[in-house]
Image (cartoon, rainbow, N blue to C red; front, side, top):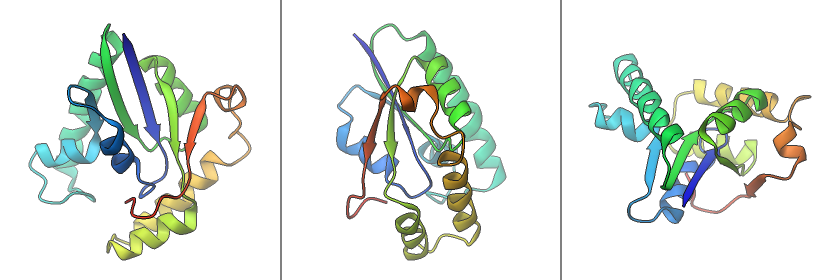
Length: 156
């Protein structure tokens, strides 16, 4: 059996936490921040360019593997605020969608509590503008293929 779950949402929505809570031994997890750390980044977020570049290359390689995967389960963690980009990624991966969305105010509160740089606030606001803007009701959203996570205390 093959199952691919594209977990998406704004920064600090709890995507990685949700995957840690649901992944089983043997599941593949593609998480940009974890890949940057594997590449040598000393930080868990807000990586230097060289680590972002390495993580992006590795993520593309792993996603190509998932595209060809015949059996097994994979979680792909992405931000993907643009509905067209999200749908294209889901189609390419053959993935079901899982939205983590605790709300913009919660994400910004988490960013401040975690000491993230001010630019993260802008990324969060931009994600909500893209995702819940005029194009937010993509064919997948209208078709009910998105499961949604509401705010869960402690998610980061």
